[in-house]
Length: 93
Image (cartoon, rainbow, N blue to C red):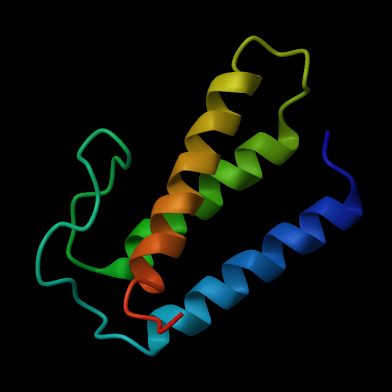
């Protein structure tokens, strides 16, 4: 089980991603993500954020000893990485 501190950090990450998503068009012009990365099949970035957040909450409730823990963790990490890259791709460095 995740600590309260970890849950708060996760909530903060998704809040920042939602804030960034509001700066963009709410609809995607094309599919941003590989078909295997998300089950979501819409052109609305909020739907992808919602799926990733659901998976992160599932991970927070899953004991590290559970057989599915590593799989869920990998999915959440990949989804977050993809969302960050997509939402910040036009950011000047």
